[in-house]
Image (cartoon, rainbow, N blue to C red; front, side):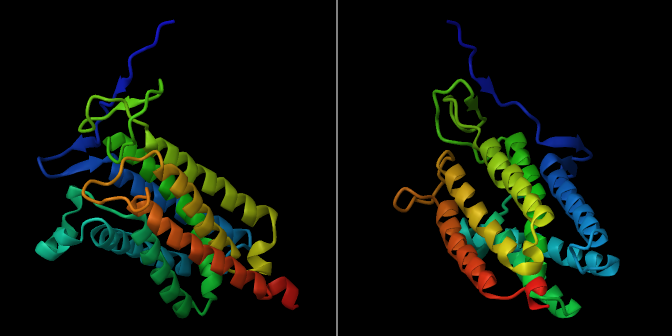
Length: 272
């Protein structure tokens, strides 16, 4: 039986190069498309009665979300994965072309933005959190696909026929763990959250539960995906778990606590 040799990753992370330092990149496009899909979903929610946020509030919320993702994601990366870098060079925060975003930090930033906007709009923070939880998966899906396009965050070595040889990852085929995570963190969580809000009264009956389910579900699939991903350089695993998996355990606890809290409270339909 003949086996084809493993594919060597040769995808270009740049869509169009303007100058030596200015270019349109797939990673940046992923963020833009993720925000656009989220804005579209938010508009649909309002039209169908799932969201109390009008057009002006939607715009304000998304400005806050964008700021939360960028600031939280960057700070999270330096705090969780490279604290010495920011201490040695505080301006490294602004060097976006060097890469460095942490999804857990982005979640924290979006949470803060959602809390601020809930106070401004005088809308329950739990309701805002539920809505934001359903908007996150498209961005996660596109972000992981962009990671694969960039040839970064590759997986552990594998002898499977689907292994990919990544630049900088040696000559051995590796798990395309970015694609695993795109399917788990992005597509699976997108389908789950959309089914929950469109086919059940959970948004009205138990505000906060969808947000908790997202945190718990994301944490579980992230931990699964991390088992195929190469450990971060310079960060030793703890009990076999890398930094992303450890942070996900903490997030899972928070998600479970939020679910229990939401289930203990009466929502709109049960309070009437």
